[in-house]
Length: 165
Image 1 (tube, rainbow, N blue to C red):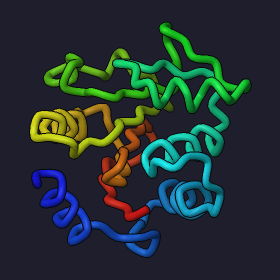
Image 2 (image 1 turned 30 degrees about the horizontal axis):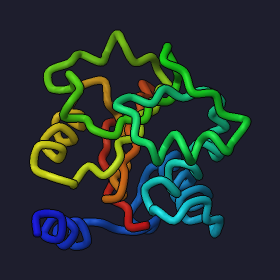
Image 3 (image 1 turned 180 degrees about the vertical axis):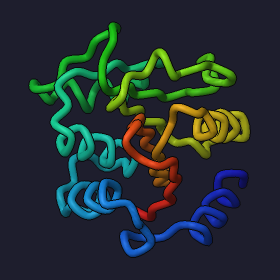
Image 4 (image 1 turned 180 degrees about the horizontal axis):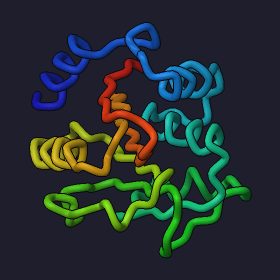
């Protein structure tokens, strides 16, 4: 029931590419998220795989590793899964991470991207997602309900987008 109510609120507040004023996000939405390719049945994992391809990501760090990510990425020989520093982080359960109050300013260099899987699964996960969005070093977020992208881009104004996919 919680997820259904969150989805209704999301639909009410979200938009498509016409509600995006950032050229970076507009291009990401139209050329990546709205591309016709279907790489996975799960909408969140599909958006993740499209994003990895769009940004030409070769190395990812899966934190709180979900089996579905490992299986989806193992078939792609171009992507290396690491436990070290990577420009792209995949987080399955943000509540289990020290994101609340964590200063990401020194830990996430410019250009770093984080994918949060299913940020509306429960109240605790949504709260962690909201706290991460409010971090001062987070400049752009694209909330797709099934997943969310977080961008650390010093050259961009802080904005949050809710996009229907």
